Image 1 (cartoon, rainbow, N blue to C red):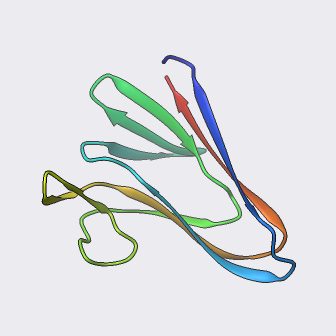
Image 2: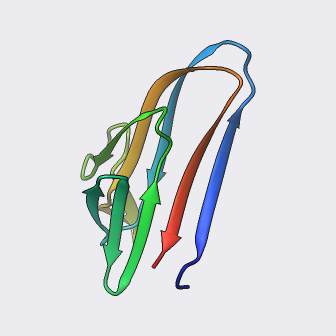
Length: 104
C-alpha cells in the first residue's frame, strides 16, 4: 500500500451558485492531526496524508451520534465514535471538488 494515492473528484453540474456540504466519514480508531497542508491520519502502523478541496471550509467532527454531520458509525449494533471530515461552502457551478488520500 505504500505510496498509493486515491484522488476523488466530485463534479457538480448546476449552472448556479450552490451550497455544498461534503462529508468523509472515517472508521473508528483513526487519529486525525492537522498539518499546514491538510491532515495526517494514523491508525496503528498505517499513515494517510489527506488533502481536501481548498474551496470549502473543513472541520473534523467526532462523537455526535444522532446529529448531522455524523462523526460516528454503527458497528455490531453499537454506536461508536469515528472522526469525519466535513467541508462546507457556497460555490458557483459548474465546479469540481477534489480530495486526495495518500498512503505512506
